[in-house]
Image (tube, rainbow, N blue to C red; front, top):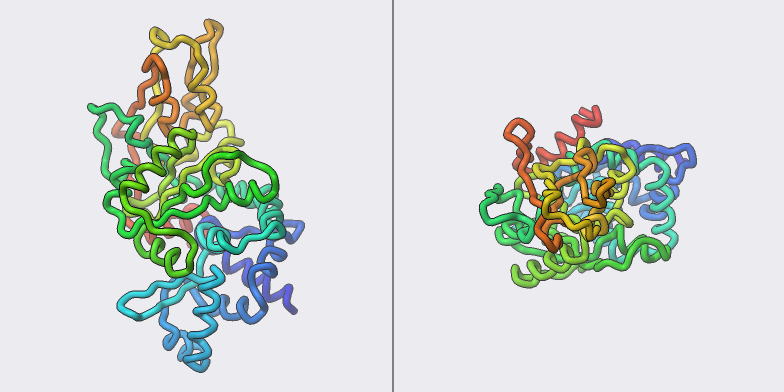
Length: 355
């Protein structure tokens, strides 16, 4: 009976965000059983992403109000639901697997769950992430990579996103943390993922991150850039978060890297251009590129494969001869992200044929 229940739960989660596809191995059911009790799964199935108060949920489900409030609060505390507290009124809603159930385990994940998620990522979820990558995360350059004369929109500027965010919360990168628990991945910084607005408040309410001011957030961003991490906010003009990712550990970025033309699959308004008259063939840019987009030609000079360049700008600021320039795509190729996270989620659902 419980397998039937958890299969229903998997199908519901598959409607949200990047989805939660079934596998032949059934590894996704093991993940759900690790996260949810039977009672919690049954309650989750009665919810949707639309936020409701405990009284509204209790009335709709025929539950005692206090019992509903206690269960909802406990599930939100375990990272199984989203909660929003405004003017002392708390509302709850269902969440996707990513961004949601997986990331909300940041303070609770153990090696068993880490290994289950790794298996699932390698089985089916990697393709789901790559196919919807442009609707989920986008790539923007950090300020150091942008020439003074190069004007970019506020939603394309990582510092500007930090400047207008209140509050700013920094938390650990779940991808890098999971890889490290399994003795895999890289040694780059882990406390590099930012949450904004109501998502930031959720992280604070449940001790999943810490609040930082603009100055500290800017330092964290600069360090992430120095370490060669790709800055990726959610694909909306007012994102709920901004990740700093590597191709070794992070699901969306590593899945993109496995495809022959990542530039076609990512939401980015930039690419790089290399001046072979200034290039000395030092290969610094090759080491920085997370997409393997830069190669050396027969003259031992760097050339860029535009099918693989995602326009992050990591190679620009560290070129010792300033041979690399970040270019903005033409007006015909320029993309404007949706205004809100809700529009982003709807776009993602449409791209997957869910709605």
